[in-house]
Image (tube, rainbow, N blue to C red; front, side, top):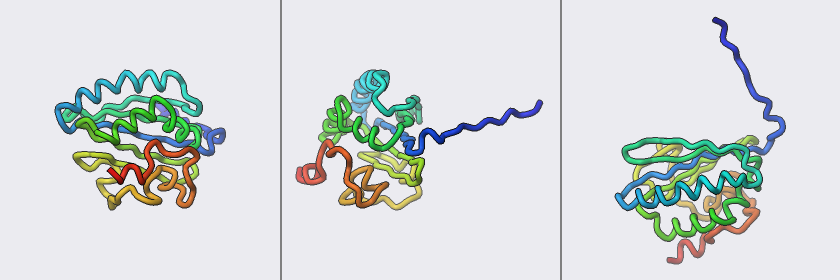
Length: 168
């Protein structure tokens, strides 16, 4: 039987961002963090934030628990605005104070080229960090926009400034 090949026309999405996100449990208390955030995250994307084109859940592994998602965003501006709004703003601020026995990461891929990633409290390398040199997330490497568009400042101020993050 002949294979039916299809493709997609992405011309309506020239600035699309595909982002993979993951949370990995590293300590027993991390299960509580993971299961506490799950329903909140589900509610947030079901509210269809402006610019979110699609959300898909992913299970990376069961042992250790490592779950995540893949999201397609219209553009970096939409994604950045959402990450600086509630409830994401509170989740991120709280995580940066205490990872709750979990590690978090994301990798983003941009239609116009480029990719960037962040790894916070990850017990084991994942994704890009398994083959590329790992650097501190400081200066131009502090924000996703800085990592993918050097010299451009974020559209919206970060949840926690670099100075505040490194002062404690």
